[in-house]
Image (cartoon, rainbow over all chains, first blue to last red; front, side, top):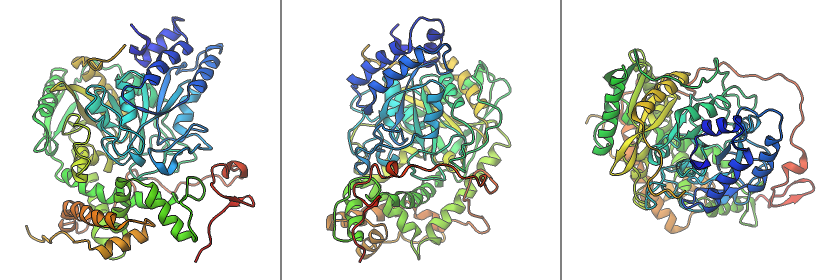
Amino acid sequence: MALRDLTAAQQLAALAAGETTSLELVDAHLAAVDADPVQAFLAVDADGARARAREIDALPERPPLGGVPIAIKDALSTRDIVTTSGSRMLEGFRPVYTATCVDRLEAAGAIVLGKTNMDEFAMGSSTENSAYQNTLNPWDHERVPGGSSGGSAASVAERQVPWSLGSDTGGSIRQPASLCGIVGMKPTYGAISRYGLIAFASSLDQVGPFARTVEDAALLLRHMVGRDPMDSTSLDWPGEITVPTATDLAGVRVGVVDELMGEGVEPGVRAAVEASLGVMEDLGATVVPVSLPSALSGLATYYVIAPAECSSNLARFDGIRYGHPIPADNLLDQYELTRGELFGPEVKRRIMLGTFALASGYYDQYYGRAQRLRTLIVREFAEAFSGVDLLASPTSPTVAFPLGDRTADPYAMYMADVCTIPVSLAGLPAISLPCGLADGLPVGLQLAGPAFSENRLLDAAHAVEGALAFDTRPPGLMT
Amino acid sequence: MLGYSPPPMIDESTVRHVARLARLRLSPEEEQVMQQELSGILGHIDAITSMDLDGVPPTTHVIALENVLRADVPRDSLPREEALREAPDVVDDSFGVPRMD
């Protein structure tokens, strides 16, 4: 078996047994990163990764993440490694500090191989809004990997790395995980520090892991959670993230969200999700229908709140402290020319939408009402969780769509996140795991739980994963 | 449906006004496309303007937190040369900007 085919846990075991070294692992994965047939990477730090691997191999005792390679979404700052967030606005930008979550993983022994492609400033569901390149779906190079963390998802599916980091605002980890046939998790809002995550919508943004197994996702999560003095919304984590071991779902009550199984869900997706619900029953779960009446209003709510926050967050990109200004005679002209020239079409659309929703005369009608609708959605989830332990739905209503299919219709692209957005608005944890194929393309099952239920979610996902035995290896993957 | 109102039309002058607020210079072609696209998106999200939300308070933060304070202890900040490292125009150890009219 090639080193690239090992999960992170298997790589850790091989390191512990002295069967391989971190340098061997880094070199094996760097070969795949250099070839990059799916165009997942924007920057590669080969020299830094090899140097770090040698350091770790020389330690008397291996750190917990042992010198296993990882890829990082380009939305996360990495000191001295170019970080663009997929935008021309940050072309060549070398951050002066590293995001807390990346710092923590490196301190635990993870080795950063490089930065992965994404929709510009994390706005999109196909990674086609990257200012630099398209990333291809490892299962079918004519199709999108999902987004916005498409590069991170594709790099794990393509086995360029065993695991990676993404960020999820309305589905940007779960949806690409679903489309690429891997595991992706968005933790409870506040679980992981956002310090060093280039902000999109601060009340929604969360960092989370991609991996090919639930166990690997748990291992990464375990080393990232907890309060950070640099992010006042980060939370003290109750207890610790445990490595999931459950093999059944005895006594677990699973609610199937009616509203997210209806119109707009492809038949093949619905069939795969329904089959996995049957598997959950076989594992001992009680599966019942649940209604979240406002769930489908989530999309509209989100497309007011997220652009409003984005229009405020992206005000910082003015070409003064970093970046590449378009010179003008006075400051206002320089701001307008620089931002008009260097932001891509989707980012400008969202800034305009958000500025409009916050503008005098429209605020109460849009932003104010969206915030109140958000309360209804939060309440409906709370009510649902008084009767069930987990909520199940498709992660994405469709399998991976062809490149270029939705770029001309912004709202069709927004629909890709219809199942993931309600959970985001409620700040709850959710995991997507591959549950089958439709027309040869992966389908994702989304499981969501109450705040801080990560351990229970991971255990349930682990049990389902074991029973489904989905093969994460894309057909035709080169070895 | 009761309370239904047609989607708001965003006219060109609104597009220009919002672009100015957002500090975005748009070409005339971009303004036209933006007017169509924003009107289309607002048509989809307009349903929220007619829903019954009486008595529902707004959510500003999903996880209840008390005020988060830090100890009032001085600590090192970013060295000046690092803060200026990526700046396109450095003037006298500061960020340079064009004049303001």
